[in-house]
Length: 239
Image (cartoon, rainbow, N blue to C red; front, side):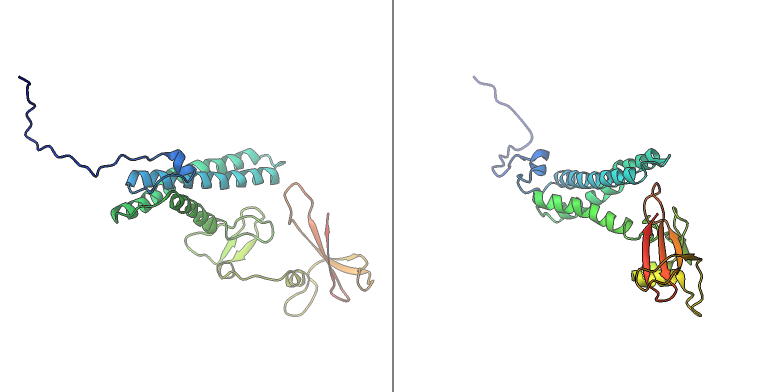
């Protein structure tokens, strides 16, 4: 006589249960099925966020190493950027990915691998827009925008001071006006910059005022802006 198995729990056969075919490789190749589990969504969104985030910061680090190749602190600056490529996804990136996955899983919504790529890359795009939207027009360095708005902002590299209001309102100046503002006083039109013996290419006058600015990388020479005292013609030379 065969022994029977006794259990206090009812035996229910779930005919609708299906096994998950989730795979990170399928998420990366965008060939996987729709995802409805929280952890699967979280991993899919996070992996694409990490890829896009690290890619952007590696490009930024390489550009900074090229621009500062002769600077003694070049490796320290590049190492800090590489560190941000790891710290960002591990902290804020993981939290934002989890919140997005929780929103979809709580609503019983399924997303595809394409959605994971878009949602992950969108986080990197948002960080780039927020962090890299303000540059110093003198040297190209990203301006530090504090939480509390002071009257002026000082560039960390060239120490140029900028008013907060024009920066926040995206006020843009044309290059001709910049040259004229550097040479002439706004009220009386008196010369502010020194005068040098240089022939104007337009009218042939032999007196021009000049101003020097560091507009290129630190290991290259300054840029000299000339203005004719007769016809106000602007000339630019790289020293």
